Image 1: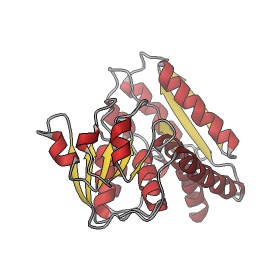
Image 2: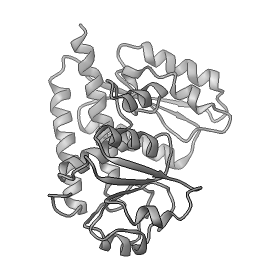
Image 3: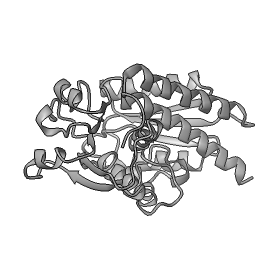
Length: 278
């Protein structure tokens, strides 16, 4: 099932670093600067911090960064108009709409205003459909980072019994589609699942993405399983559960660095596609 070593934080950080280095080299080879536009609605401290991190990473690895900050009372129509404008701007190659959004915003309408070719965050309905059908398009970046990690550690996916805990539109659902496309047998669990432990304890690969700290205990993990913790700090997987696993990703320092690395890589992918159409 897994031919690689343990998912330790330093090795994982090195993988993200290697991907970022490759992204920087590809960016430098282009005749223009690949540019990511970030859009933030409101002043949520966590969202502001995440956007600033992404902006710094763009500068660090040779990408351009454009930021649009809208007031918290922005309407759906106003936000969609901004996204459409960025969508037709030839100097912008990728668009990231920071979420969560204020309650008055229709999130689906906003995400779907981003053209597929520039949806480097993989949040639009078109991006989800492309992932589900195996068509061209940018993948949701956190699931894409998880798959990249599993491939790096030579974790076999075809035929494996995978359980994903969490069904969000930006993580659980697109990840299920991506792993199904790789011939894994996938079960998606959620808040209405009966006897969650009965599902998780049989998984050969377990992905915890519920955003509930400590949700996954040692008794819920199959001995020798591969466990990926995609929850928020301090993580969905308890320390004891990680010890039962054959390999387990840490939080923080696990999926997070790969998520940003995939965002930058897909922005350069989008810029390279522009060159290919000229």
